[in-house]
Length: 211
Image 1 (tube, one colour):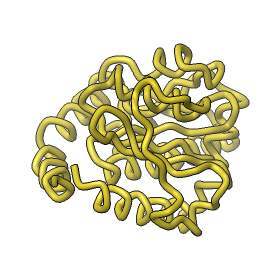
Image 2 (spheres, rainbow, N blue to C red):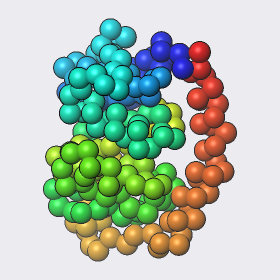
Image 3 (cartoon, rainbow, N blue to C red):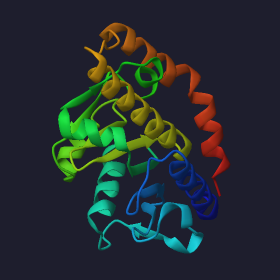
Image 4 (cartoon, rainbow, N blue to C red):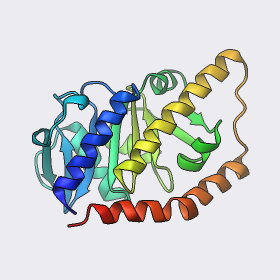
């Protein structure tokens, strides 16, 4: 993969997270790179990121907690190439008050799945248990949101839809009993999105960052 193109896309994505008001200082974005990853430094606001604010980490390097989590996810989810760990207000509300976020919206069911689980801690094992199988997003009890993708663009879409779904859930809970999408309908939507509509798009985006 082309390092400069990967970093360029992460900077673009970071600015989008800020524009959507789903970020704060300390959020991290990363992409798989060779036998490790490229990730932004935690002490720079996402909107201010430049290429100099990214570091390469390989397996065996000394890692901070976020870097260790990202590295573990790449080892576990071998078909995922990008991770966003961000802070979103409605996801934070769900994290404090629920064990999982159900699919109330069609795009949530398509992209995130039937539910997004809430990890009890930001520990590696707790988070990995929430992204098992086809799950590519979760909320962490600390208030962070996690989204995975084959590309950074897909991970960003997951982050956006996760917060949109959390907002719908919180508002529906305030107004009355939220009605989640049925299990079969949600499963079908998720399969159709992943197996049909997103394949060509993600393949083209992955091709764009090759050496």
